[in-house]
Length: 208
Image (cartoon, one colour):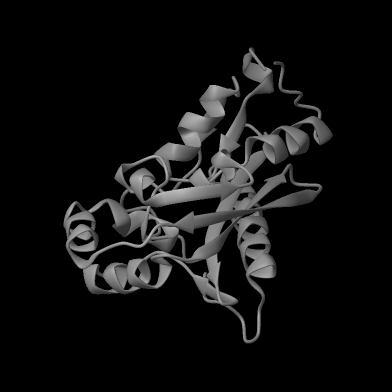
């Protein structure tokens, strides 16, 4: 994927997803709302549906973001290329845990994760205007027991605030993690194995 015709769009503000795509040599342009352009991403409702499983939730959001991204591409009259999107959520006791809305919520989430194993689910989706496909990665993460002081220090750092489950495995929270089973990149927010599979399905092979 080393020429202009093989570029895709990434419908995500996440710097971690940008880093991961660059890691495997995928050429992309960002496709997000500009400041002042139609406000925020109101075309995707991130509220869980009644009795919705976390697997269905992350896949629904990733598919919705890819479809919405392609509509945005047409609205801006940009060159048509596949739009890649992703969504990540945590599951603890079968409850969906997203991004914290405040420091107090982040602290409460971390207190619940302390000393326990939770699941991290990331769905990745690709849309080219004619078809939209998705894959879901599921990993397990075990936290060591955290004390109140280190939870408060971590929350005060601000790092939990834009991350599902109130932590980032690639940041300071790495010292909280006793064990992972699954995909490190999936826990970061973009499972590279599944991403490469989707790209190949759409005729965009990732070369090792």
